[in-house]
Image 1: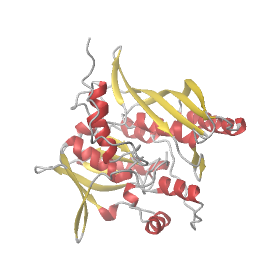
Image 2: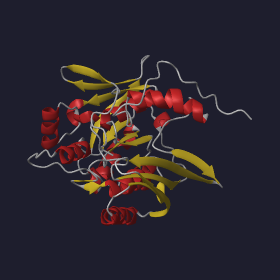
Image 3: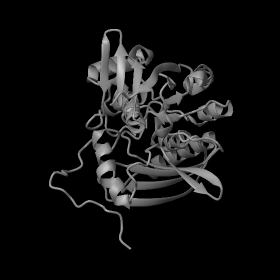
Image 4: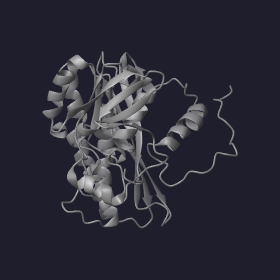
Length: 346
């Protein structure tokens, strides 16, 4: 039996460069031109934070992620809690109740056992708080100087309730776009810790489990068309990817997107756009306009959504899917970055 039609290397393929591991134009190209053909994935298959699987009459969400953050500990979290919460959040974006996780550890020779114990303990606490358990895993050891301490690869499964179908292909014209809080905290917190930047006041990661927030929305009967947590590539990348997948135009009110003063100041100093800086406790929700006010109230009642806001609307594409960040003076078109602004932040 012949396998998928994986393309042969082309002269213009080039090499993987620093910063190409996260959300951006290079990642989109790898998925479309390399991974999809080699894995036999149909081009029309929606891309989301996880896959939906039908198993014995139930629908499961399945997701996988890898974590290479440096430093391993940062204000507001560490690689262990990040690995658990990041995976649980991806399941939640599919509308799933998280069930179980796996964890694979790539350990560098010479890494301290006591430090590994702290990371594993943080994972255990995060898993218990999220109502999941790490049930299987693997360890590998690489030579000294080849692993940057520890990398963690996780996978997770969750159960999707009957009648819940969430994904970019469900977005419709007229939908309201909701944002659960301010943006840019996680990436700036990691950057500051890595480079020893003494911002005053200091910036802490927004790392938070979003599963209870999504569960509250579903329990209230809010019609959720699409959810996306704003990790690598930040708010802007998530919006561009959703607009492209849905074939629609998103009109976003720039002034409605909150950026804290410390994050804004740090971005100005570092020459970064906070809309493209990673978050680990923020989501966007696309809901029908009649459900928007109720969904917003539910978001604001959750610890991770107290500063939630309506930030935009979905419109017919008019011939071109795009995201417009609109102000009184005009609008700018958001696009994917060629790489990451801040590599190694998750």
